[in-house]
Image (cartoon, rainbow, N blue to C red):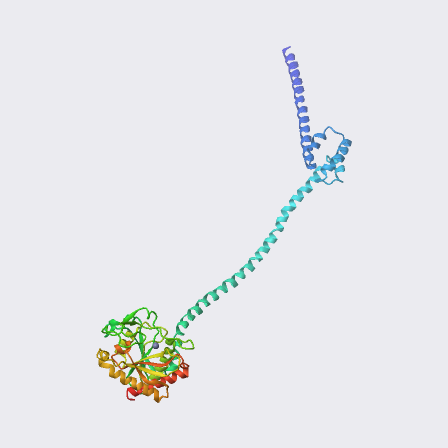
Length: 430
Ligand SMILES: [Zn+2]
């Protein structure tokens, strides 16, 4: 009985187990199918690009979808092709994948396009070459210009410094027999040096190069030409005694202007300029005759007052010739300012020791001018108490070579200079 019962029970149990095993398998298959169908639909609808289709399609009929699609077309038209949309909407379930894949191939093409872009990158590699060629030309041109320009400017600047020397061309034309020269500076230890107030300037001593030098130095003093000379004063006489005659400074004066401004010739030339041009001509002739020449002034200005000029001549030269043009306008001719024949004056040093020399020189200068055919004013000699002769310790003459109406052309002044040389030659015996 037990054996039969256990066999029956075992069979019942096995039947129950089989029945139990069959039930769960059928439920799982249904769930998987519905889930997969839902996801596929959602993907297709997303490609058609409308969320409304995703919700409408399950419940709506195909005819309704076609009608809705025709009504929706206006809204969809901007993004999708309108004529194809009616047929596409019925098809979606059949051939959604083929339409989707072409879009994938389209996305693949862009990746192939980048391979085409490397080609343009090959073109840029050709552009570096043109950039390389401009560089050599740019670097090559600046270098030659940079090195070339400094050199000409460096060589050009020394040349201007060399040209000032050629400006001394008046020397060769006016003085073929000019030798060496030296600058004469003021020496405060000179006699009467302390009576001078303007003496910062210097004079120049020119030595003759003539075959037979005379070893005689003539001081050529171009009258006037000292800036500031009219605003300061010097003693008329070294001992401070008053002037005995009138002139540019009246008689009785103790002080006189250091250097007066001078007159102006009728053609507008200043007396200082006229005496300067004459002095240069006289200098050239004297050098040619074998004299050495002390030039007090060789430009429009020299800072040496009348006392300084006289003191410098006293110590450097053998005679002193001062050149002036008188203030008259009659072209009256040349004359010499001779020493005033006043006892007090003739007894005052240095006039006392040297007035005979001044007088002798004055007479020789007039005689020489006459022999040279120069027009002479009156007797050619007039008495004056001048600063020049009041301080001179060498033969000294203040010569009025003419007046404001005189011929100061080059030939006219050379004639005067020749006449003056004749007087100097006469004085020195030769
Ligand atoms: Zn004068």
